[in-house]
Image (cartoon, rainbow, N blue to C red):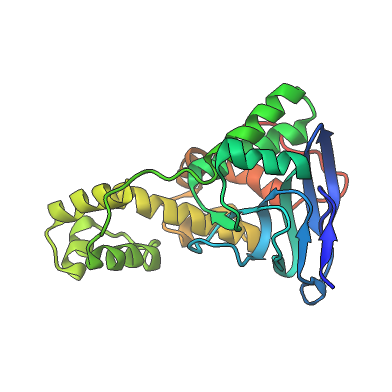
Length: 278
């Protein structure tokens, strides 16, 4: 028999839990070992933002490094879990009645999706900081919640049918993000002119190769913060930043909080006071 959790209930222990009519905001430590997590569902829709550890999910979408935002509709059976120990996650929960009403208002799919969009995750981090501070008004938290939900499945309409070499360029940037890559290096590797590469990147992917490289570096740095205890200065160098201050600026721009603040959310300890907004 598949377990069905009530809205706001998870395999974890709350560090904080804020409840409003039909909405719950919680930061939780995963307490059940990976092998003991069974297939289950939830009575209400929910969103999970993994902030520490390696989060394993069957949700639809391309897998990338760093934080992942997962949306699960009500009653969808899954076995999302953390690999190993020490996982932490921020959960946004909706009551069952509200979950069904949201389909009509937001047009969300009826299957689980994963999202790595920096703007959406940045909004989720903003909601986590606000909820943790205890100072935000109910209206503010509800508005931030619906901003995250409303943008979760929004996609920028880009030109269809990208050329095959564009995927190779993306893979090269992902694999060599810590190196001092130039457009000429990538263009030569995939066999196109550097000007054509830049234009097609923007047309099909909505960003420049440089934007993609910076995003990959920040994602890699975030992944290391989530899964190791390395010093931020070392992480900066490993990920291709010239120093920690360079990492700080890129991290703040992408996620809306500094690496130090994120590390505190990621390495929560009992009795710890949540970081103030940056």
